[in-house]
Image (cartoon, rainbow, N blue to C red):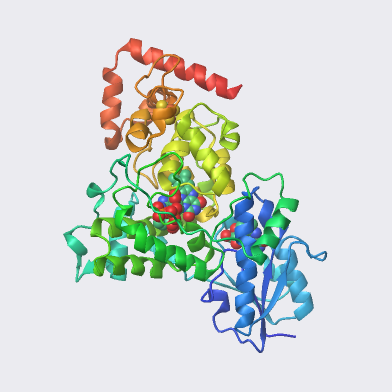
Length: 509
Ligand code: FAD
Ligand code: DLZ
Ligand code: SF4
């Protein structure tokens, strides 16, 4: 008989996680379980499964080194029931704890299940708030409560004031809250991008790779080249490397894309952050320190801190405030099935092909590839948000529903009708051409909007605007394109809509 059983999930791998607070190594046991249900509720990219299971194994080892008793159930344990609930029950039967202690999970699906664990196991369950975030779910709901519309920018300013990050007294450092006007430049062809650290799989990771190759062979994604940080120390190396070699140029090239170069000046830390291997406060403080010691300019550091202190927290707040209704939102009535090329990369559109093949190889794409290539295409083509959500949940190593869904349904697809973003992020080929080198080597011509070689993003963009003109009419941020649409010659619009119709019909076949 033990005092309490502490459950740690695969994305809660922090020694400071709430479920481990006040743990008594003499009286308590930690339960960690590799279960098939979590590996297959969507068919995650193989690298994502390896990352989570390997990081879990390394974390369990670090707990044991600290003198903690860990009940660790491996995926190939013959007694494994392969669900979190089943493993909790089994451990309760084995250890007869007086209570269960858990940290609230990152997904609605798991929270509703967890709320039934007390009945299932016949003991009380203490579900503790996840303190890894700057704001709690309750605090966000209180902030959002009195507002007619939610805007990330105002939330972010409050977060700056509240945390004191990048503040000079009551004022934002440098006199402005947001330095985006200086960011997001086009990437010069000649600029060199730094190499990023690659973490060669150790024996633990190699064993998990073999397991995943055998058990989840039909899942999307390559296993070769697995190089993710699987421990807190490795994640810290990735962060340090970013602060030293990439942060200074993060702002300038934040929206740029280049064929064959997945990372550019991005941090590549989202998976580690979401799993608990990095702490968001420490990440923001490290970036702030780089500005204060002169290693990076304010436009870069502010742009980076905003992603974590602003967007990441805002997105999580929206998820928990609006679930489970949020998962049903489909404001633009999109119903098309997901094209096969999202899996195969077999398309003549170079930009989409590049994003998909890179994602298959590494389970990573940076924000603009996700938003303005695969997301933008799905928006313009009217793909069913449920299918798009599932794709993003599967293919990225950092995907957990609390962060994936508002980014996909809200930011990329406008399926939430404007909660996350104030307008659909719809764009034609000109945007992609400006921000990347993809169009130089594409079967389509980005300058054409009509005809056999016309870039599909061009005619799909105007077809999208025409389809939704009435619904989007009141949106001041779309006044310009909607007025261009009105002024467009009938001949041109009919030509583009004809191209769009044919292209979409081919997709449906
Ligand atoms: P950087 O560009 O270096 O940014 C630094 C950090 O800021 C990231 O590590 C991340 O923690 C945070 N961040 C940046 N933008 C966002 C954002 N919009 N929302 C939340 N955090 C943000 N991010 C996920 O962590 N998981 C997801 O499942 C996910 N799905 C997405 C789906 C779509 C359609 C879109 C458009 C974005 C999605 N994002 C998601 C947000 C963002 O694209 C990734 O966080 C980012 O690309 C991760 O790479 P990085 O660490 O190099 O980020
Ligand atoms: C993503 C994931 C995977 C692939 N496997 C496991 C697992 O075997 N055991 C576990 O505890 N957690 C896993 N996870 C993470 C969970 O899916 C995650 O904790 C929930 O989705 C809540 O965010
Ligand atoms: Fe993508 Fe169009 Fe450029 Fe081809 S021409 S890479 S389809 S934007």
